[in-house]
Length: 449
View 1: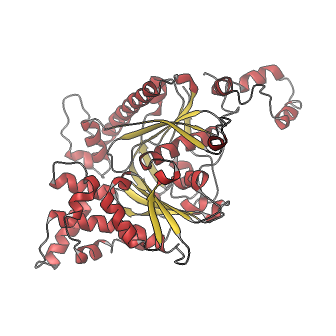
View 2 (view 1 turned 30 degrees about the horizontal axis):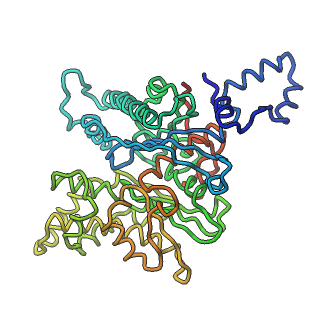
View 3 (view 1 turned 90 degrees about the vertical axis):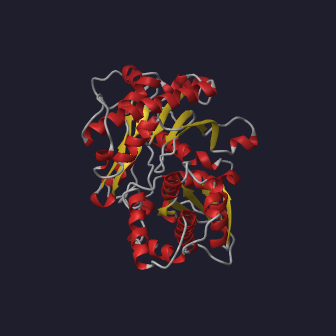
């Protein structure tokens, strides 16, 4: 394989004279019948050199399945400029692309047990769930490869300058209570089509040591956003909403809290697509035109997930359009006199997101101390949703992560670039206090180019 460490050192002149770690050198002296020069040369072809200063690609397609985000970024760069040298990460280029319609349709079907039964296969398509899984894994890999190559072309960056791609894949089943999480992705395809090593399958190592396998982004939040001056809360509004609480002077992993709080864009987008010709409620305008149905909101909040203690995580298994339609049917039977519109349901779903998230955030807030909540994910672009969050968090300032120097659209993709870097460096990527794991572990599997 290409030696990424040598490339990084040549391009950035960070370590002009690479030397082996003294402890490793001393240990090698005690090994019989091995040629030192040969071992040194062999190590230069592995991941055990230097990966702290280089280019990484991060990719993310979330629960909402609205598209694939990709970023090219650099960590630990010392440019000589005082201000820039203090930045732990530089986002160089970003790119997003919608899923091909058929791939998205199949992914959505695979997210539901026996969901592929709703698909009508053509002559050359699969006719069983396992075959559909294989088909979608390959198609996802091909699509992700196209996104990477477009990103690199847009950045005018040579492929050999990129140390690795962190690709999460598409979660089609998340069953922490059963000890597994399944991400759909053929990393071999991406490695072959791009010529870049790929790190994937991030969740299952955490689950192997008793964790939920989610959320994984809080470790990145801590690395990039923690401060000694004040408590910060990161709220990610993707398909599912999750929070990361970073207490002031947080320099120990056990101080960080993070978990899923409930549904977000997953239900908002599904209801919008069902009743309009749009895929999402731009700016929350449709929701804002409706009225919150308080009895329905209270009924939805009775879902057992909301009462669970953390650590906890959720997904389409718990919250989906079929669940919502069942709840609406129950509501209509119990409250036949109440009249409402589809816009009222959208307003209620928006409030469900804000109430469930803010209720959790408020448990960590000291009303006498100002705390900032920084929102990322697609929900950060929903101005009505942001307004409702601020109303439900009166003791906080609510902003997007743009205030911290990172556009809210790209936070999760950057996080998986960071996680890929952690893996190549042999560093842990999970926070046991967040996932419930028994210990910190190195996450992911590497598919070398």
